[in-house]
Length: 344
Image (tube, rainbow, N blue to C red; front, side, top):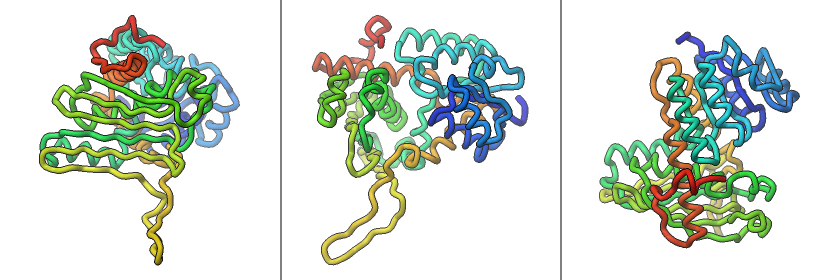
């Protein structure tokens, strides 16, 4: 592979723009050749901001560009699978934002196509690259807390999404909790075999009318015996709440929220500090940089991506198991989820 990886980006929306900025200013070994968006003006704005030579409306012009080695797929979810397969067929390495698709059969088709093409394929679970969570992962893997017994993930958004988004997102488990499902596997290093969910609509009745819930508690049983819990809310009024704890036979390790600063104010009546960071782009700024650097490095060195297609598939299986558990009010084994009952 060349010393410099030429990159194309498909999708110039919020996350595409973030990746473009990071590639242009903070990622070593990469050069952006072209960007596309169905709204050509969005691609042109991004190109002008970050010195990208070519901007298109048609993604095909990125996929077939002879100078591009790798493609970032940052377009809408319903395009991820098709664009990934087209990129792979064109011999391009692929970084794809989650989820690969909302349909399990389509995911399987995509993974088969990527494998047949022999290209690198990485899924954008950026939280694995967060400095806090990576430290927890490393301590658990090193045996610093003994055998893991309990995992607790707290993942609460500062504000609910609009109902129009909820209707096309696949619902809370495929849109929001899927990050936590991947984090659970990452931290414990064992597959989840069973999922049980209880939840409800406690934040916004419009989310219920859109066919979803906004508050959930999920219990996970891992193959190695660990028990996990994930608590989700679409609205934490105090900010973006992202915490984890792993408790084991020899101790516990915990990661708390990130804050804008470390200042505390003490007076005669209270001890106070600023609220946590309130937007995921602020909370995970550095993790987006780290994940893209990992992708570029694996292309350069011909190593396997740290987050592969199977990781994307399994998190989606867990999301469908969670949805089924909630609707049927019972524990659901992940192996129960098949292509026939996992469609959206």
